Image (cartoon, rainbow, N blue to C red):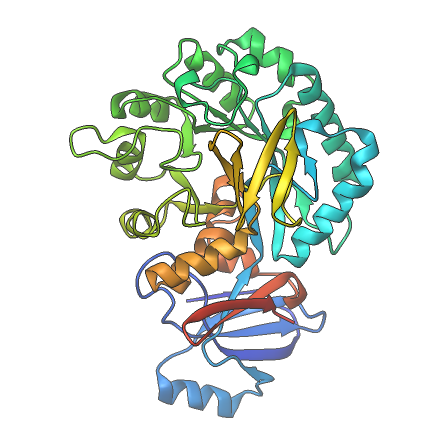
Length: 399
């Protein structure tokens, strides 16, 4: 298997592994060629040990990676803010700090995010979408890229609202949707809603016509109701296990139905608190090609633990976990790639863990179909190198 472009070859690295979701995907070694501009122009599978030695003898090699993995940077489809900024509260005066946050995210190994706007008032929502539009125009190298926004709400089941404010929930309707996103349709990548609510089918249909992906979340849907939603165009679960019915042998719920049918992305917060490590590993083994790691990081991301403001409420942050003062689990302050390291440790499947944060999210947004696709034409400075040290996964910039 090889991917290549016909350009002048300048450098070659060998014994590189590429992440993949299935057992054995990380065993194959590759030779990767870079052109005179330092861009990846060929990815070629290496044979057995004898063939690898022969290839190295017949073609100059600049570096032997000794089985380290090469991946694109992370893509986080659920992140609510950072450095004290909550995305639903953005104003134009926040642009400098937003740029600092995007630089921090790049340093933390994340290439792109879908800035997540939790349930809030209509005016703040539209203002935040306008500020994010401005911020996209300010993008430059060395900063995380802003994808379209992720609207997590307001069409959520009240019984499963979690930390979302009750007063801003809304019943799904085309009028309510237009009131919130009219004029910003191209600025939105993903909407999370409860598909079992009356009126949700029409909203799902409208969003899909606009090219906006739809996720099930903060939902009380049964497996049957979830299946109807998937048929209508729902393509993802937001933070699987959380704010939805759990897996049960007589009531499989949305998660069981999503795993049964396949093809539905399963957002997973791998902090070990939102989902127990055992359940995170079981999900990865049950649906490896569907698992998508997200951070669900909140405004205190990048700040110290302690007490922080979140809209009119207080967030208590301890060991990277955020809770409201009534104990309600609200999110995390951990980087997305910390979840990769934890999932790799729990599962002993580092290749799949890397894939779930760096390649799987790109499939959700249509950015790439696989790892090779995501790597071709890229310089190493935009990519990550992963290696195991004493059983722990570590990453660094690939160049």
